[in-house]
Length: 142
View 1 (cartoon, rainbow, N blue to C red):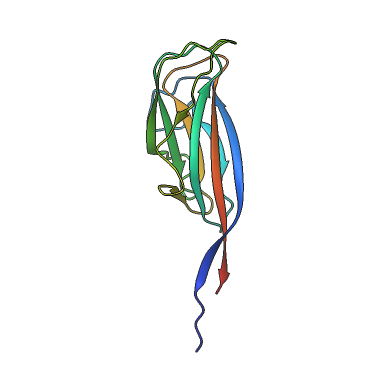
View 2 (view 1 turned 60 degrees about the vertical axis):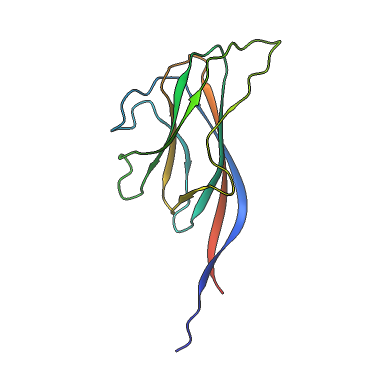
């Protein structure tokens, strides 16, 4: 019987944004975490970039990336933290975004149905904006 390999081919890039305003101080639930993206069922994906920028003055904050599996959508797994340094935001200064240690050479591998959440360790009324870039795949016979 003839066997075919199933090879994933990249299909498109997807960008998603989320704004966190409340501090997330617990690690065992999704309280104050914000959904960034839900990976389509049956299609793997890679998170190839994640960064965050404050909309106002911010104290140093631990930023967090969580993934929940489709089978347990309320159980967060802390995948990666990043430290946002304190910054004064005004109209005459530019604040560099905080980059997570994720890129095309070190992506976060995601399965179909995974839920990707972001959070901040400090609250900011006008929010911290997270920007994620995902590479979606479709599995097709070779």
